[in-house]
Image 1 (cartoon, rainbow, N blue to C red):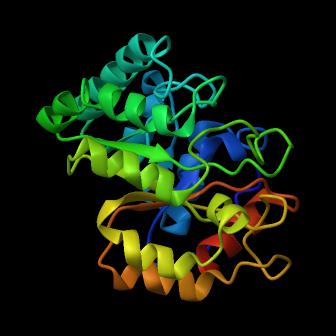
Image 2 (image 1 turned 180 degrees about the vertical axis):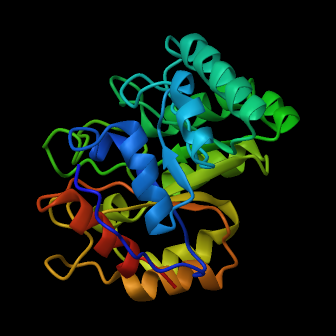
Image 3 (image 1 turned 180 degrees about the horizontal axis):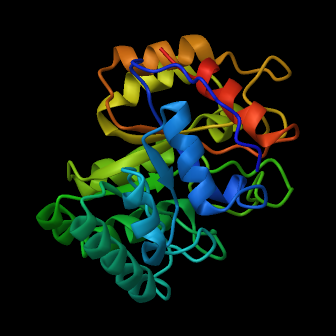
Length: 266
């Protein structure tokens, strides 16, 4: 990796996080942490706890911890015991490290109706949310798009494919530690009207993800989402959590990431 002197904008109101899986083919985790520091990012996310010492050596956090995967989730009682155990493990590890959030998913519909999926999710999350509250960790339920049939760009069959659906689950659980992961890329594909949704659901949003559309690539001038006003709207809600840069670069990764930090600021 070339040791380029990167000057990211610092002192803004957005706390950036780098989604490592998008850049792991380009850099080691240690290299990514060095870049994060030079760009003013505060987190490298979705890192296995066994590698957190690398983050901590660079004074970084893991803003979002993975638990179970998105296909077999909390909407299906037969998967719930394993999901709950994985969430419990992730909650305990996050709490011990002082990290704030654990990722969770509804799962694919399979043969479960939408109404039953909500009921199952609420019942399932109520079995673990008390533990999250005790440990001071949030569970962040991610909404994913079902329109794009390309691996890691869309997830046909995923049940929680609307903001309202996920919000109904979150309200049903009724805990301040049950939050929405608002992925701007996925919301744009399924619904649009991003700023209005941010304003409407701000009290329930615990995390944001950023990527351009179409393609889940760089959030730059080549795609349709105008991130400047969106980031301003996020900052204006008083949100002080992390905004994960979770895009698949098509250009030089360092150039793409540097520009994404500059664009996604407020």
